[in-house]
Image (tube, rainbow, N blue to C red; front, side, top):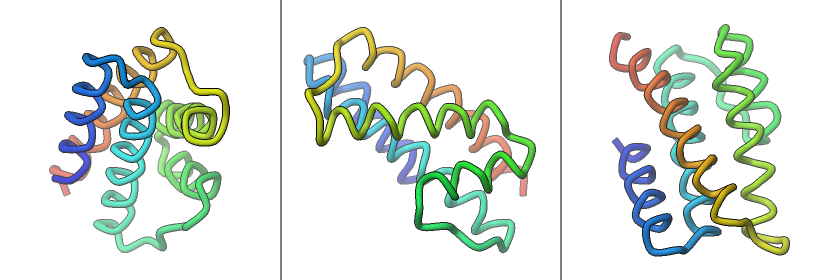
Length: 110
């Protein structure tokens, strides 16, 4: 799955100190898995990030939705702002892995 590859890229970027790239890849890994879940359920896939998080939350996945929102916020800092620290990048990749595991368990069970 593409989401797993994006998470692998995030981990590699983290290991070599590319913190901004790691956060961006972590965000897109979770976003892709969230979109895959909604697609499997036959649901509309919102284009806006906040609407996607709301759709995931409406499926009862509150923690995943919160992680998606947090990742989006840090991705904006990484891609358009001053960048992120190593500490933030580690947290983002760790939380993305947790959210991705939850989403993939559900998708694979459908």
